[in-house]
Image (cartoon, rainbow, N blue to C red; front, side, top):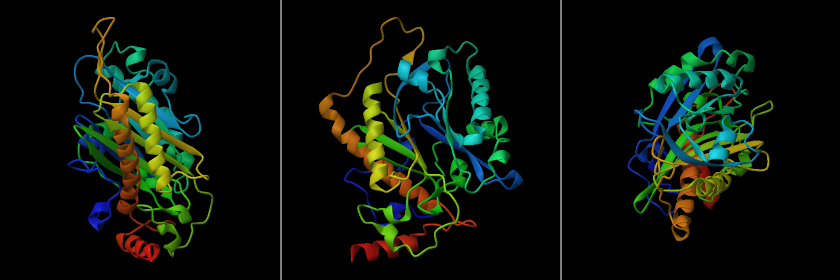
Length: 340
């Protein structure tokens, strides 16, 4: 399935990384688990910040939230310590509790003595994909599916209706999971976006309001309206700087129409793979940080990658009953009309 750049459409001024994916940030991996049993169209998506290894590692994390972040577990620890010890898992909201328990089991296998500030509670983001699914049936999703998701962690990132993207709806179209990255000097910023909101008329591509020119029926029924994203970078940023990076990614999502006045839940998590804090490293540990003058290009890159990641997710999604897809042909035709 072609991605946005394959259609000759380039967002922003920075060049993408090698794969134009969040996994262009060294050490970051993504895994999906699809769930189809019982007529479900759902799944899990995990973002791991580093390869498993001996020892306890913590990385700095920040976030931006539209609604206070109520749909995320581990919020208090992340804000108190400003750190986390991944992975981050996006899961259907009714299954978030079972996935949470599964991550605790996973953490104990990794390290029996893992302390609170190095991984408890786990980070799970509950995504409402109830437009295409029976929420009661989704409660069956849990540890077995999480095992498959984590076993599939790798650098190749599937997009569209995979993992948690299987049941998403955006702009009255089939939603999905998408990814993109940007290079800023020696650093990389990568985004993974789960698009599940936006009004058709607000869909924009590189500043062109293409949604107005998509001649497709609107789906019947109340749709969830939310957007979730994970940003990763190898730039040495501290938690407060990562809050700001996450906020700039939200601006990119708004620019594409994914985040608008109708969206009820919005969350961007941002982490840096640099400055790993290691238990036993002493009461004082040295960290580095990008100076204030070096932040604006990283912020700009975060917004660019967020917008493109969301659009890549839409393009990769395929039509299902009740939801048409944003095919390349439809997008290019709408872009042509929008430019006239």
